[in-house]
Length: 226
Image 1: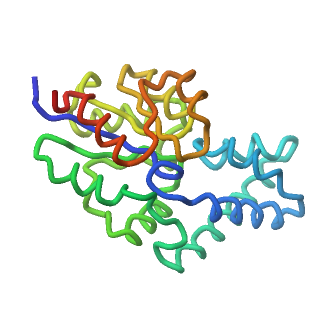
Image 2: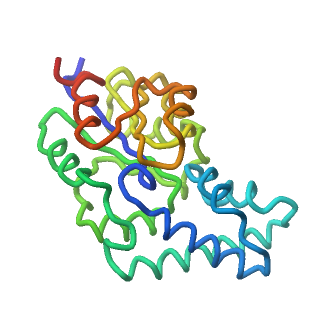
């Protein structure tokens, strides 16, 4: 058995604090189709899935053309926000150091599985100078939305890592359900969009309160340090 392990991360609410940017982009999306934006709490509850699935939930009764127009407006608004640089969606405290420390471990591979588009993710990683940190990157462009495990399965296939030596780190119940569907370790973070109690109920083995706690958890899962 390989000594390598794989740690896959969600992005929004896990690595970056993009809440304000996401809410503003949804406001622009709804304005573009002449609809009032839904309550902030409803928007935050939908995050974790791909944009088309979020719009189905947030825009009941809307036709496909309306949702497509809204999606285009959302992506344009989010792209404009990234011209402000990394501060538009800053890394959560300690996350940059954690990623660099993990990337320096010869036996650790890193991945991303996110509901973002590949274009949006690339811009975000470039803004934070993280483009070369991840060995496998899966986005909503090529996969069904979480909690479908397709993205995580693709990470395993691309890296050749067995699910018993893989962990997924995320902030939503969709993330936890995806990891559990493949039998990978499911680690929650307490600074994102869903409450810790909900993450535990969805199958999280543990929920980290900060980046230092997450580092300690990762030392003990997916074939990490004893």
